[in-house]
Length: 232
Image 1 (tube, one colour):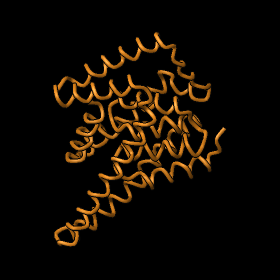
Image 2 (cartoon, one colour):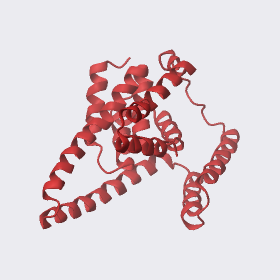
Image 3 (spheres, helix red, strand yellow):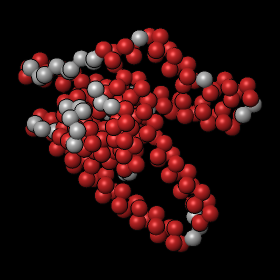
């Protein structure tokens, strides 16, 4: 079982190095959790990534939370999820203060332009690395191209594309006899009870009535907006 100090150090490192958006963040997690440490297998990582892509909300944070939960149950998931968010939150708070002070200066505009260019390179590199891991067969590449064309060229609904891809994957799995997913361990399975789900749902929505009763209209509107955004 992964020790908590080691789990904390690894996910703190992931949180500090997660630049460039979801693609780059997922690539960092793949390097740390699959390549450098045998904490997740390639198949486990890709299955978790696929599942997180289907869920509402940020898939990179969900993937980090899943990885921590898989390793040490609910405490591990909380550690991984918090450490994935907190470093970025601290950095963006500092940058926001600096931008409010110096944002109108031409040097700041030049700095932001350089950051944009470097982030594009990070994202392209991350996508290339992930594609080599996920698209191993010609049929995988064909499906990826078809999904891209369906979404961007023909503007088909995203749920329809996902449903068609899932049906194709199920048919291919039966034909090829792909390895089934590894079941969850007892340490992780115990966190899936309905009572646990209800508890976290209540904790998630708890700020809304508190803000409403306190008369914090602006904060209530912000919380309600982002709660809806997380769902859809």
